[in-house]
Length: 128
Image (cartoon, rainbow, N blue to C red; front, top):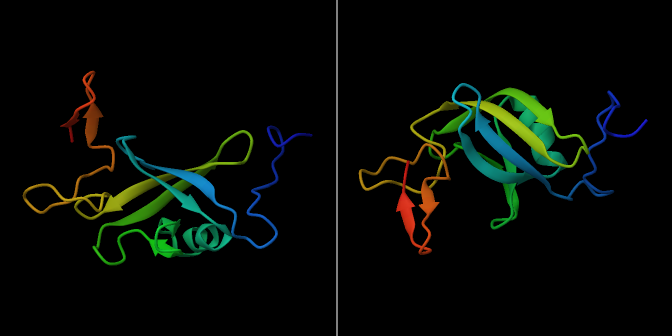
């Protein structure tokens, strides 16, 4: 039986647990995509243990519990896995003012990291 039909979790974080798996994070209520981040074994295990979205920060090279500093935590509702077991979907309830580290002019975070649209001329327009 292939990964597409098994009931066994077969995520491959590599022998050392450091291989990164992409994680799409979505608001469980609105279905808005909030973040695309990555998880290694440690981040995935911490997410399951704590009940809050935790990732591996590629830029800082450390565990990143989203919102621990800002207060904009993401409470886990459900974790889904794709058919090939090589990416994850975190359905969350935001517990703060927004999910993005970027701030609007009023100082509040954007609700999603996907707050700009690419126009046909290549310019960016804020939409969220």
